[in-house]
Structures are given as C-alpha cells and as structure tokens.
Length: 605
Image (cartoon, rainbow, N blue to C red; front, side, top):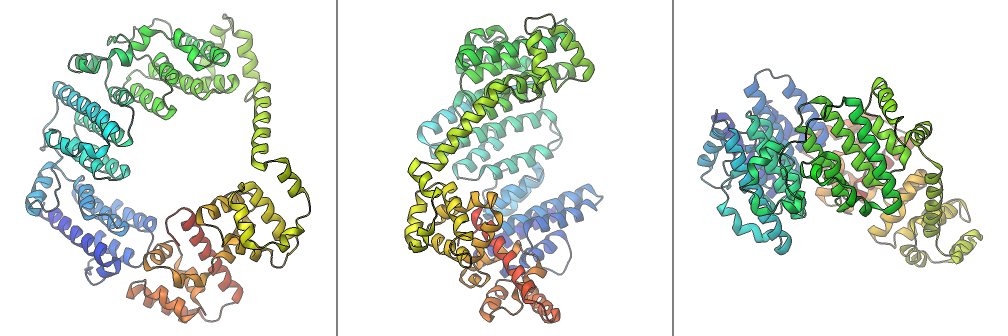
C-alpha cells in the first residue's frame, strides 16, 4: 500500500509543477529507473503523441504477470496521460483514486490531510450487498436524482451545490460535486466506470451503473420523466414491484399508465410464431403511421402491456411522445439486458428494432429486412409460413423481393434532392451569374469577394474557386483564392474549405499551402507548437528543418526537451544532402497537420 500512496503523491507533485511551469520543467525530476511512470513522462517531455505513449505503456503492462503490480502500472500509465493532457491535479487524483480499494483510498485521504478533498468512494474489502440493501440504496438515488433533475433544470446546475452535503451515497455525492464544478462528462464517466470495473460484487456493480446514469442524466439536463425511465430500466419487474411503494410519490401512472409490475405473461406459442406476430403488428403500426402520422398510433398501443414494459408497446409510446431515438435505444437495451432467456431476448431485440424503425420512418422494405435480419434461414421460412396466413402475405412477399427501396422512396428522394439543390444554388439570378464566364472576377478586389463569400453557401464558393484555380489565372489562381480567404474569419474559412476538401481535396490542399507556410511556425506560441509536434513523425521534422531559417529552427528546439533537441540536431547533421523537392513535401505534410488540428479546433492560430 505504501508504494501506491507514495506514487499518488508523486503524481500530484508532477501535475502541479507541469501545470505551473510546463512539461519541460519535469525533465530534471524524472528518475533514471525505467518504470512505467518515469518512462512515460520522458516520452511526454520528448513530444511523443498520446496514442503512441498509450500504446507503448499498454504493451509494457501486458507483459506483467502479477495482478497487483499490473494494477499499479495501470495507475502509473493513467497518471502519465493525465499529466501530459494538463488535467487539474484534483481531477487527476479523482481519476487515479478510482482505481484504488476502500483501504487505499482511506489511507491516501489520511496521508494527504484533506489537501485535495478526495472522498472515499469505495467499499470495505469483502463487504457484499444483498438485494434488500440494493433496493433501499437505489430508491434513495432515484428519489434524489429526480429532485435534482427538476431543480437543476429550473435553477441551473449550480443550485445543487448546497444539496450535496445531505447525500449518503459517496459515489453519487462525488459525481454531483463534479457536475457542479463543471467537470467534463467523459471524466466523470471514466472515474465511475473504473469503480465499476474494480468492483467484484455484481449487485454493487449494478448500483454503481445506475448511479452513473443518474449523474450523467442530471448533467445533460434530461427531462425528469425521461431520467426516471432510464434509471428504472435497470430494474427487473420483480425489483420494480419491491421499489414501487417507496417510489410511489413519483406518481408512476404518468410514466406507465396504471403501473403493473407483474411480469408479462408467458406465451405458449413457439419462437417463430411469436416472431411472426411481432413483425405483423410492427407492419400494421408502420402502415398506420404512414397514413395518419406517428401520433395516430397512440390509440392502438396496448396499455396493459405497456404497463408491464413490453418492449414494443413501451417503445412506441416513447416514439409518440417524441423522445429522442438514442434515449429510446438506451432504455430498451437496458431492459433487454435484464432478460436471461436467450429466445425471449432475441424477440425483444426484434421489437426494439421495430420501434426504432417506426421512429425513423423507414420505408417498409428496409423496415421488414431489418427485422428479419435477426432470424436464421430456417426460422425465416417458418415465419414466412405463419405470415402466409395473414392479410399482409402478398405485400410481405413483394417487399422481400425488393431488397432495399421502393418506388415511393425513390420519388421522395429525388424530390428532396431537387429541393436541396435549389436551396444550395440559390436564386435564378445566382444561377445565371455562375453560368456566365467569370472573367469579371479578375478585376474584383479579393476583399470584396471575401465579403460576398461570407454570405454565400459553400457550394457557390467551391464553384467560384474551381473556376479561379483553372480559369482566368491558371498561374496565380490558387494564390488569388488564398488572398480572398485571408480576408474572412476562421468560421467562414472553415465553412468554405470543409466541403471543398470532400469534393476537391487537391485544390483544398493547394489553397491551404498558400494560406499557411511552414515558416509561419515562428508566430505560434509554445503550447501550439508542442501540440503540432506530437502529431509529426520525427524524421519528417528533420527533413523539414533541413536548410530552414535559423529562427524557425530555434523556435522548434526551444519547445523540445534538451535531449530531444540534441537528437534532432544530430539527425539533421547526419542526414547529408537532400533534394529541395523532398524538403518541400515534408513541410507541406506538416502544414497539412496544422490544418487538421486547426479545423478540429485542437489549436488556435
């Protein structure tokens, strides 16, 4: 235990120093030992990118046979990546402590003397959780989550700050505090998923899963009723029955109608008959939705089955209520995972597929094929035999003969495409303008064209650029386009260039080479240069710096560790004579990296 406690303090010290003075300040602190942490920090100082470091350290961890040592190394790897990313020290310790057991967390909190406000969120070793305790804890979390959801949606997340003191569950308390502090949802998810992975008791793992769901839903601002559906989808019907009384104040009738916690009655029909019944009912619902719209389905929903959370009836109600399809998928998937019987699980999966297709308003052919894709050939033959006795037999066979799309869908697609095309091109005057020779653009000031393009669609900009690049000034066309774009703001530049990258990638690349040159690096700040260098192969950088201006070289060297800079200088010296063409290609590839990082907003220029 002493080893991991000492390491946590070391990681905290490194984090604070690197955030205060930069990663290069850690160079003199790294020890000569080749443990995971020191080796990883050296790679980070040398400018290696995150993916590269993670892959190397993971490979090293995989060679370890001892489970305890392997866990410590996993914590060390996590610390390296968090320090490289510049995470706040408190968040770093939150994440690292999520790998620890109850005793280790308690010992670290005691050793730190409350300096970092890291709570103990684990459970005592060997302590299990029974069903009654599970229901009691989950009821408390659901009630609090509902209250917090209502309040935060009305008054904002900061209104929960004073509410956390009364929370008994340490994980829920920690999560809500992180939410109030504005912590990114991915960090919160990472912390609690680590706890789930380290928990041996299955019942406690389920409680942690519901807790995570509650925290993220509150943070996302989910509708309070949707939040309840999400949390309750982790309970079986038997568990829901037990929890119904203490949760009665939430008024279940508005969630399920008249709540019926009895399981759905067992059906004596064999699997293929049940599958045929599901497909038939789903087809009828789809057909009605086509005629009367989604809202017209509500009167056909079987309320008694919805009250028992039958996947199809329950899901269609969500669709009628306008719930997002991702949320529907999540809720129904949680319910399906609670099912032990594999055949019933498969039937429920087909029901979920039907619900999602109704929600997306898929055409009937795609709809039917998505449902039967869950059946084997022999099962499909029996389902077809059952459906041959229904009033949709002929239609069903016709749909099977047309694998993907029907004429109605083709007509709708053509109509939609025509509308989109009309909107993208604009008025007839604009069409006439671009159908004429564009020689007039040769006499227009670039700043005027840039103002024009700010208001125009990317399609018009692409058309204009394509003409300029190959038209009146084939020699300087790309330069002209770059001059135009230099007069627009970043959002306009991105809006114009992004579609051009898909349709004319070579033209987009050429334009960017004029917009930004390799020598522009001297104008970037140190943090930006370090982010760029993490994405560049070292040999590419050696080639690009060969013969470069001294100010460019010094700008690069000063943003590297002394060891990495010395290695780079040595590689440049031993490279010998290289062709100008190869140097230019290396520099162009680096400017391409700059463009990618800029447009993905990893760096700001």
